[in-house]
Structure formats: C-alpha cells, structure tokens
Length: 359
Figure 1 (cartoon, rainbow, N blue to C red):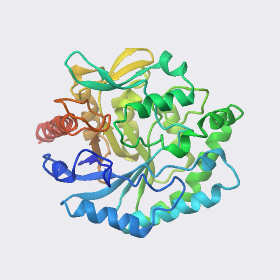
Figure 2: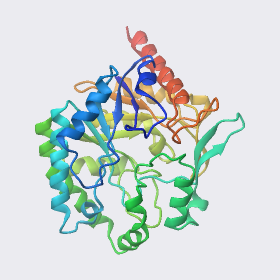
Figure 3: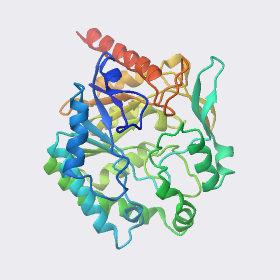
Figure 4: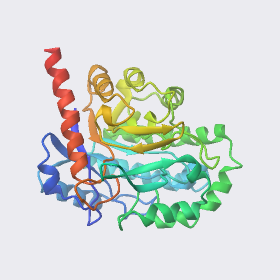
C-alpha cells in the first residue's frame, strides 16, 4: 500500500505540501491541473512543472486525479476524436513524468452532488451531506449556487464555471439518450485510450458515480458489483481498472464492499477510503473515518484490501477521502488537513495490524 493525500496546486488549497510531508506514512500526493480547460492536453511542460513543485517538498506524484473527460466524448459527438486525441497525449505526458495511476470518471454533466457542504454536527465539526429530496427539488442553477456558495472560494472539480452555463441543456440532451448508447460511448473511449495507457504504463482507474443512484434521469455507470463487472468487461486490459471509493459505493445499501473488493482486487488501482453515516435510503452525512462513527465497517474494508490482489503486482495507492472540518479549520470542503491526517493514521494502523497478524 502507498498512502497519498489529495492536493490542489497553485494556491487552490489551504493545505501545504510541507504539512502533508509531516503526516506519517504519506509518500506522495494525488494532484491535478484544474486550470487547464476540460478537453485540452496537459502539456509536458505543465506536468513537469507540477511534478517539480511536488518533488521539491520530498513527495511523489505517482497519482493524478481529475483529467476530466469532455462532454462531447460522453455524448459520442463527431468532435469526440479530437478530445480523445488530447486525452491520449495527456496520458503519455503523465507517463513520461512517472505518473502510474490516473483517476477519472465518466459521469455525465455533474461529477458529484451534495445538498450541503458544511452541515454542522453535534460535536461542532461540519461535514458534506446529501439529502436526496432536497437535491431533486433543485434545478442545475440552484445546485451550482448551493455548491459553490460554500466552497470557501476554492475550485470544485466537476463544477467548473464553463460547465455550469450549459448544465441545464446537457441534462435535457441526456433525456433523449439510452443507457446502451452511453455504454457504447464508454467502450469507444476505452478502446481508444487503453492502448496508450499500456504503452505509457499508466493505470486507468474509474471513480464510481457519486451518489450511486439516478439523478435528473442522467445515465449511471459505476454503482454496484454488476455495473463494475460490465465496465471491466468492456476492455479486459489490466490497465482498465477502478478507483474503489468506499464512500460513493457504501451509500448503496445493496453493496457488500468487502466482497466487492475481494472480487475486483486485481483491478483496483486506487482506493478512496472514507466512512459515511446513512440517514435514510438515499440520505447520508460524511463523517470521521472510524467504523463506529458511521455505517461502514472500515476494519473489514481495509482487511479485504489487504487480503485481495489490490497491491500484488502494482502499488496499491490509497488516500483517506473526504474529512470533517474540525478544530476551527477553514479549508476546501472535505479536504482539510486535520481530519484527513487522522484518517491516514487510522488506515495505516489497521494495515499495520493486518501485517503483524499475518506474520
């Protein structure tokens, strides 16, 4: 297992690389270049500059998140080949700079949704929260306003300004779109980019839908074991794999996360580990990482990762996912320093216990 922390560059993060370096067990960051417009190539110079910044703090940059896929690719428009070509160039440029894993998603229109980015809890902390009825009553404009209004001025991946202006029209577009057609567009993308990923030695790791149920009648991709099997079967290359996000998949009550990890372990290239507290069938709060703080058995989840083929022939990259805002910290929602650092030590403690129990 290689522990990482997500970090946003160029002043878009309250957490510094120097602080991340001081968290025991963290070897690197999962970073991004959010200022590059979706669909454009991440140039060699841009990737090299980012890696230089990370390396100067003594950290690795082997994981990249959020090379977002242009909506024309998802829609299957004639322009998609130009954007796929840029994506292939990006993969090659990342591989040349030592990136081994690329986390992305194929969710249409909006990458993720919450009804509140700073819900107060009884202990005085705040968390990101989802109330389904509240979300479905909103329109795209009000959701965007709700999300960005509590972002504390930081960018929100998947809610870039250029996407907001066309969000309503895109939702209408997908109402005329069959699920089968959407899956065909995913296969078209995979068959184009996976050979480039193989030659560049960059594992592609798709992130599950967040939340993992229908919203505004948009197509869904990765929500449960059946959809994961279908996705992996589209292209059987080991470079076509998963980001296993316990929070995203864990709010679907039908999902047995340890069983899913054991089934797909060899195709899980990256794990986002976080707990959630289920408040109803489609309502939840994010919460502290410990099992007793939420609805997920983190002991069994980490044990399954340890016992599966998760890190057998490829570094099993891990990061603690969204944390609470605690101790008066003012940071990007979900991505403060303190609670994620607590999450790191909790996950590392579980992993060390499994290692010593085995010996």
